Length: 229
Image (cartoon, rainbow, N blue to C red; front, side, top):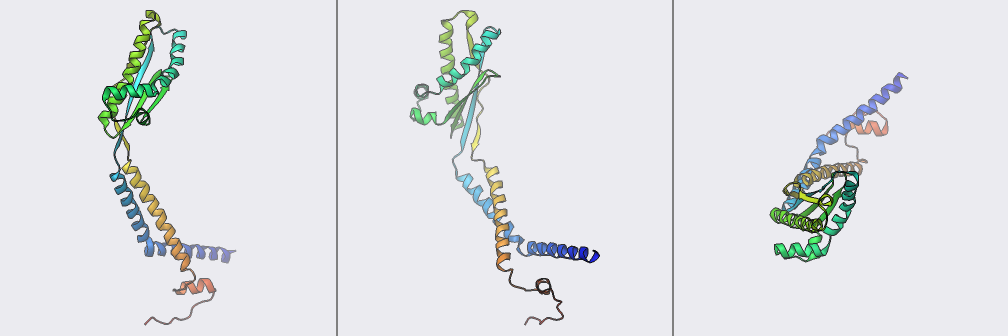
């Protein structure tokens, strides 16, 4: 039992020493591939056109806070979202801001969402210019406010619904995500380096260069060696 445990420990020690030897000899491959792929992804990200996203939140509030009116607002949120997501609204924004886009092209850069819990509608706009992205969001939001004001004029005061900006839109960089891309490139490069090392070790696994290799694979002691020239 003691001899068995000793053999296991010796094999573990040999494997660990092999791994350390591989890292010492070929660890530079991991570093090199990680640096190269990180540099490549960094350069690629820097070459991409920066796209900004601007979000505008529209709060929808009933004149009364009773259950019936509040429930009506919740049910209207989906209708507001559908009303906004229209080529007609897109064309109105294009005409207002004099944008050099078609309605379908503009719709492809805009997304709409509604939140029943907070009773709000969100307009998200992507553009290479943060200012233009915010202008489009504001113009689109104003269309909904104006339409609701028209509806309010037809209703009694207690049945009216108010829509207002929660805040001014704040554009932020949406892409490229240079830091994340560079880190992902470095991780991928490191994994690639490990694969290359294992491939090289597998190719050279049949070559015995050290006395330890002979003793391990042939299970016989080495009593002498010929010095290299």
